[in-house]
Image (cartoon, rainbow, N blue to C red; front, top):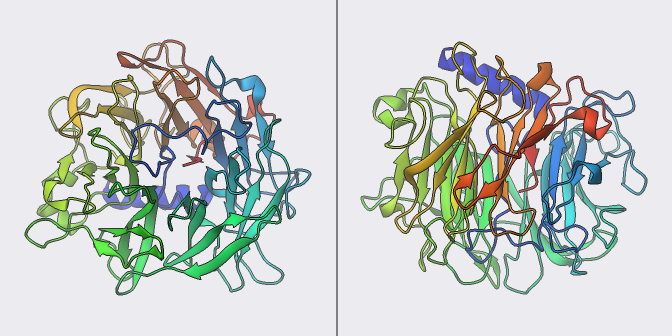
Length: 493
């Protein structure tokens, strides 16, 4: 399939899925603000039982007859991992959730989690970029669903747009960005503006303060954001991949350092020669090399641009690793990988979309952050865009192809069968839901079953991810409307 066709398919998927899925986001593991490889349970634990929980977005789902109203489903962790019997589904028609499910709301267009009210339970934060506010179309809304001893229930509005297509609630991230011990929320509006809600938050959703954040220079468009303590000072930093609104092929990595005064002015991530580190469309942060600093991993999944002539690694997609340090991202030590790199399963082919989603966590318990990489455009035999996921190991020198693993729906003991346009790997998340210090791999395939979407869970072991004991689920398990839902578009991250 030519690059133009792939970009078209991604755009179509984005229209079905959400603004976060356009070329951002995919799902990544919820980053920490400590630089640790594994995610903190507090930020993911909605019911306070000590186990991380997972939220699955279906922003294109029909709710009570309203097309593309959207919902977010949650499964709770346990000593044996995620339990399908624990599932809960939340939409704007759920009792206690603000608003009403309406066609095109895209509830679930962005999802993250954090303990906003400091009560010891993580809260679910949900964007709905298609929400109309009064007569203002696509103003967008950001909602919180409160965690508690019995799980998630009730909610409040955190922010809502006031202007046409403001799309409040896009690319939402949470962390303590001002070192006051309270979680804050950063989100993107109008694809180009960073908005900051400073905690603590009241049960009515009110933030202590709201503000704009130091912006990039020039006319930029955000593609994805993530949070991690890149300089190891205990305060969350914001990282992003951006592009010029006039020139798609200008993908760049930016870094906003968290300080007691909030975000410092942005810094571009450059190499030692002053030239920028080539960016991408998807970004995550976590400690890959176990040095206590969060590292940056960027996926550049869209190939076929003129610049690829001078970036041969871009063929089929590539992933860039930038280690963190006491002075921030070390662009001079950036490393690049694609499917032709030693040890990585597969072969770099046009339109594989290697790097469409990226997530960091420790899958084998050795303390290094491993990287899950979605390759939703991968052909399995003659089945185009069936999709796959690759897991690269972390090491003291960063990511390595040694012992890298690959999974798809034709992998033995993975449920289902690879089919054309499944988009397996469109979203990935590494998360330890059974508290055994080994993260499970959660995979979304939003085009499975002609756009219904499904989610897979593969266990982690001391040898890495395994298909043994894996399972999958879709709308039948959740009791939701299946057609066109695009379940598995993204996860809380």
